[in-house]
Length: 204
Image (cartoon, rainbow, N blue to C red; front, side):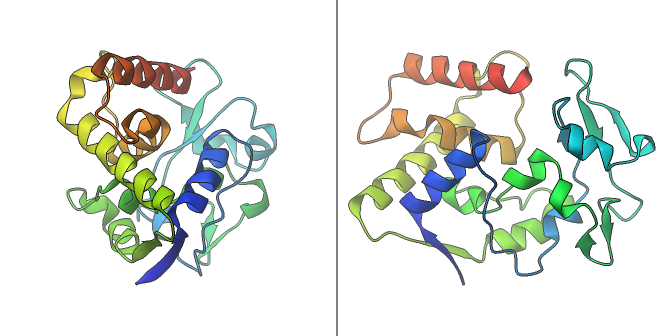
């Protein structure tokens, strides 16, 4: 198993990354699973430095997003075209999506990618992470994130109409709304309101 750190410390870090206050600090140790798994990378209009380092021919409009939002696709092998010789050729200028991606979200939320054959490498890597729970807070937060993920998967009606999150998005959403599940059974309306707010923010 691979140490993922204390859960509460990791939560603080990943929440900061989701708020765009910092990049995720993932000990990848040379792993390129997320770069070789047929991922579409969303790039927002304000990421001017990133856009300047990615050829226009590799970008296309992001479906359902406002003008200026684009996606970076993958090559015939399912690899990011910016991955050269197993290294990111634009690492210091990589998209925000890459800066905040953390495959530890899957064991955090109790979710797997086993049903997606394109994400086998990520699924295998995610299974190796093991969180520490040195305090009651660590245990409570981890329980709350897993409860949130289970609730969202079991009750898709709390999601705004037309929202069909991927497993990655579901794990992230569980982290964002986990406080509603801390120490008590959540109020269904409270969860629905918070989920709707988070999904709406993500669509802007």
